[in-house]
Image (cartoon, rainbow, N blue to C red):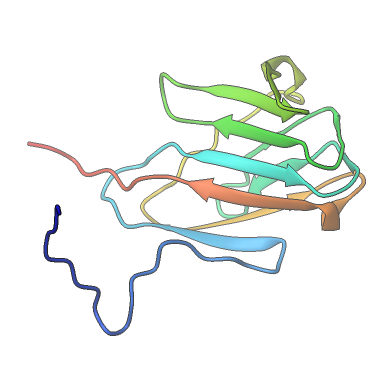
Length: 138
């Protein structure tokens, strides 16, 4: 059998954090700004969702209606920017559904506070922020 030593401190290791609120703080422990992947999941009808960085006042939004089970993935990593919709098992490019002039939100170093609003369905939307801290090299 393949084995290797592994130990988790008594306090545990945090892999993710869930907020039951429309405002959440993402902490970038890296020492440089970073892109991220934002995943929006609809549990009901959601119309025109928009995500805001409360500190920079930047936002990115969609001009579209989501139905229960729809998943939108927004990638803001430089060189990888994309917006896709997973609906009924089919992934579609929906970058053309971005509303207005979007800000491709980045994570500054330290705490970043985000919120979201929808024309309809604020309570039917959940969000996840996925990122890896980046460090400046020599």
